[in-house]
Length: 149
Ligand code: IDP
Ligand code: MG
Image 1 (cartoon, rainbow, N blue to C red):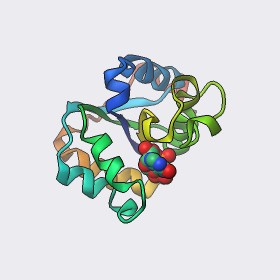
Image 2: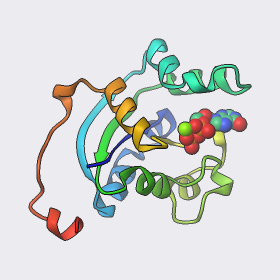
Image 3: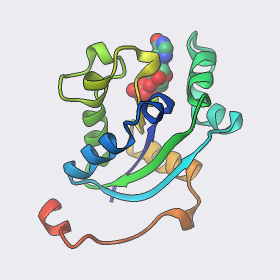
Image 4: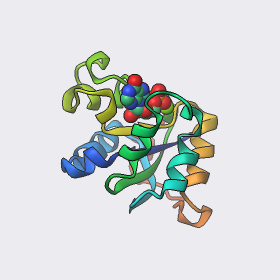
């Protein structure tokens, strides 16, 4: 099953949107397989956002993601990566479609509330970066056949 890392970033945590965001993913039918509420270290932030090193917003991005705790989660499901990115909306909240998290709760790209893996490969890599294997819970929901064809 495809996996994706989801972070409720510090602004989402401070604004008490953890429940709202989890609720949207649950309603979509995705299955939660790992979660932890944590303060992100400088080292983890730099590894996670290594691809953005050197960009003008990089220093601000590291400061943002380490500024308060995050809710880190792994969700799985068919096409989980595309489904979650669709639920979150475009990176810039003013370009995100109405009904998405970033549209409904955001204004600025540097306060866009969530992270979600952008490819299935990165879903696997980011899951391994943020969680130990024993932190992933393999389980079946009684209603899985009503969500998954
Ligand atoms: P994504 O989170 O939608 O995958 P990326 O392009 O991978 O977007 O950028 C990672 C994060 O960096 C964004 O979610 C946002 O928080 C931040 N970011 C991206 N572009 C800018 C910018 O132009 N200014 C400030 N922050 C930015
Ligand atoms: Mg990205």
